[in-house]
Length: 351
Image (cartoon, rainbow, N blue to C red):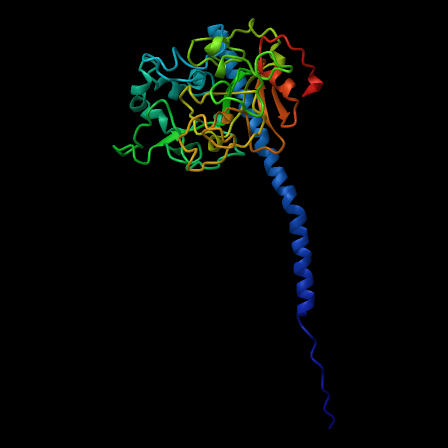
């Protein structure tokens, strides 16, 4: 009797075949991941644009009622009677923030309004947050009160809900800043810097009246005046509302003065280049306002517009339109877009 022996068929992959499959999958992931990340960033950037459109619409609703743009500060900024509020709380009622607006006692001085604001202080206003950011924020929309990784506020931060101590208090932050235009951001506060030029220079980048005030004999060239009560009207935007920046993006992690409610960190200017990084916090610059380390988050170089979007930042203009300005924009053009009455001529193809 003859016995037939059948050979067994090989089942599965060899090690080489498995490695080839893994390599192919890795290549596909490497090709797809940047596309997925780009798609996510595009979605976040679209949401950021929508936020600014809502802010622009709310601003024009405010104008229709009050005949002026919202001021950089309510009353006299640092004055003893000032409540320290910035432009943002003023437009809350026009941006579906009626509950927060109604919970604010606008008559209290800034040193007393912290505890009175406790109801809304720890409420995040999502329309003022760009989804591309969030760095340093825990939870999103808040940063520690003071310290190298925290933010300060002219309004004392109240205790967190359920506590009686300010230990662990937080500061509500924002990604959108009012524009004080091409008034000086650094001069004369910290002296010579890489961008701003002295009066009479050609070209002149920056004008007296730092941060939009009438300090040093200047005047408000943008929309934010936090100490002298200056306000802008539609008629005062003689350069054209479609050619003038009203507000733009900022990064709380790179600006120790960023605070949603208070006026001191409410605005930025167009003399510091877009997306100039101020994310350093060495010991010799922490709490040193006016540091000449231009990358320190306590330096006045932090008073520039910036974002997490590659290549530039989003801005809402005085007419409510939103534009993405490249970081490579001409310094002269950028400064001109910041002034509402400088008389400069800027064509739309210049930015």
